[in-house]
Amino acid sequence: MRALINPAGLHDPVGHGYSHLARVSGELVFVAGQWAADLDGRVTSSDFADQVRRSLANLGTALAAVGLDFGDVVQLRSYIVDHDLAKLTVLAEAVADIWGDLPPTQTLLGVAALALPDMRFEIDAIAVGRPPDIP
Image (cartoon, rainbow, N blue to C red; front, side):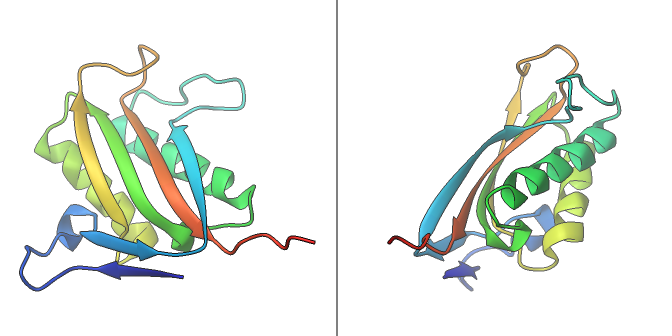
């Protein structure tokens, strides 16, 4: 079970691509940083928007591997090399395309570099699923 909450006493974060709080119960799933990698671990594009889209697609693939989807995500952490408002807009639009007007909580970190020289974006997540059946 999960509930995303945006209290009236705080600014509306939805336009920036996140919600303030996630209350959860059940099985937590931690997804490591996903980036614009192909199956060989190479960066698929130098374009920032393309990297965001591919990273989110890879996040979706990771979630599906454990029977979850984007609706099960309660927290995102995004890492942007040389962050600026234009990149924030790209990210916020991509998040809105997936989560609509109730996105998960999110923390964005502007960073000097990521693990590989061509990486411009990376995202990790926490999701909540139903506990597995235990015999």
